[in-house]
Length: 216
Image (cartoon, rainbow, N blue to C red; front, side):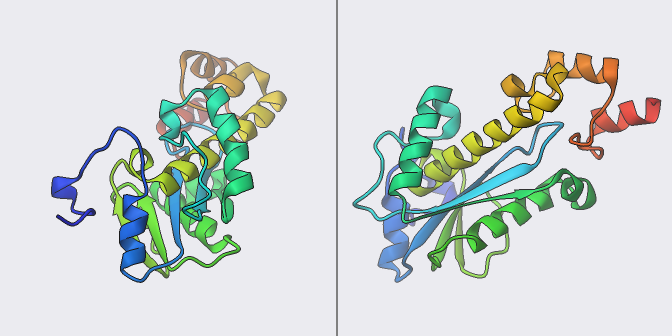
């Protein structure tokens, strides 16, 4: 069965190299893994990463970033940055999110990440079920961050980068607790919004922020 057949996917407990290998056997090399983070938060940009590996130089322990502790993600981030053939990180801003919507902004960030690689890939493995409109051969992979080593690495890079960014933004606006909630609409964040209102880093097109701005 085709490894990319979504009707009969082989959901393995940890990511491996089978999808990259299948593309390479088809003549596509190198292959990059692509993922994004930050669709759901009420504040901050959406961040995407693209990663190209040499099969013989991949860090141990890669997995979906959501399945790893913060400490483990940080350690793997450094290893990926050191060992990957190429890594690219890109954003779509809050203004772009509000202008073109969060889904399209996520696609934009992924295109920017792939374009920023210093090694031009011939194919991309993209987490999810929607291709971002790349100019290279693209395969989407549902739950790809738990199945493909390249996508898992991209998920870790994007997650750690965005968490660090939100921590820095949180230093300017400590009342929202962004260092711990990364801009998601948790209780502390929502309470601060009701108390002091929205910042320029909030997504005005998102319903809770739009409602607060209308009330103001």
